[in-house]
Length: 99
Image 1 (cartoon, rainbow, N blue to C red):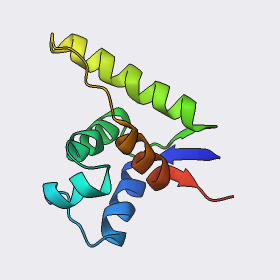
Image 2 (image 1 turned 45 degrees about the horizontal axis):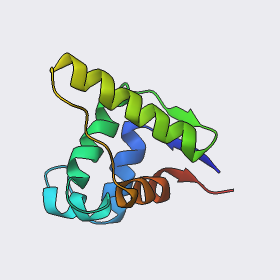
Image 3 (image 1 turned 120 degrees about the horizontal axis):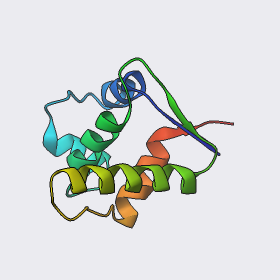
Image 4 (image 1 turned 90 degrees about the horizontal axis):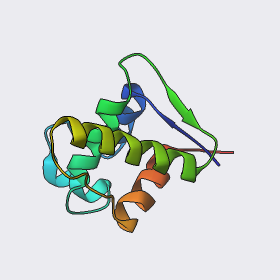
């Protein structure tokens, strides 16, 4: 399955659930539970405004997310966070492109 990410797609995902960008609790749940809002923010940060990122499979997408997290954590002199299986499952569900 192919996966894609854009600011527009993230807006559509939130809108479909009746959520706004400031609804941290709702976004937490939607993106896999505790720290889901963090991963939503990470996805927004890694995608340039007006662009779409596309991955051919979930492994490529997860590797890109982890690489972005590692790079930004190094900039902030912090250890990188690692998404849980629940975060990955939710992100895959939300960003997957149907057949």
